[in-house]
Image (cartoon, rainbow, N blue to C red; front, top):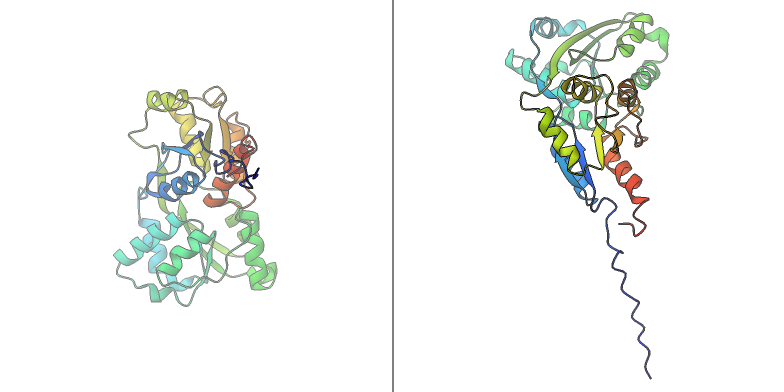
Length: 283
């Protein structure tokens, strides 16, 4: 009697770790596509419910002044893709050419930020390994040859109208002159509705992902509360990094999922690994 050597079929062998899971993402709609794609490759059902919208600053006065005196700076520091996009849009609208930036040193926080600069034909001198402000300060310090070499250098940081202040304060304490100018701002989207968001959660959300402190704060603003623990009861909280997780904690949330590297692909992977532990079949 012949014995079949065909291995038994494992119906779960190709099961993905997020199969059957629903992940709510709060990132701005214009930047959500990458995150959606990353999660879907792990089998997730993704609901995009942006709690922030990126718009122009209330006034361009400070940014315009900085652009007109760009020759007075030694460094440009971009903290996000948004900072690059809104700075360059205003820069070009004002009649300037990117070649005028060639003489400045440029620091880009994050690979996506660096890639956006390269797409605009701009060089990048420093990409810190640690995306937190402390890590950026350390990378800049090492690049110039020590803190004493920061004295007298002029930094321009175009960023969100409201952001963490550690980096400009640390540079200033080291003797540098730092101009932090608003290049954009984040607001609560007009279409964001408490009832709709609650319905999404009630529909079986397994996880909610926050990619910035603003996404947490705006959700709290939507529900008119400083404690989101009841709103998100039973939903796993994923945060892209320490600062976002700290903001989540300030609003009553415990972060179950946080990647070692503060990027969207790594956040998606961390979510998959977290739920994969309850999906023994694996991917």
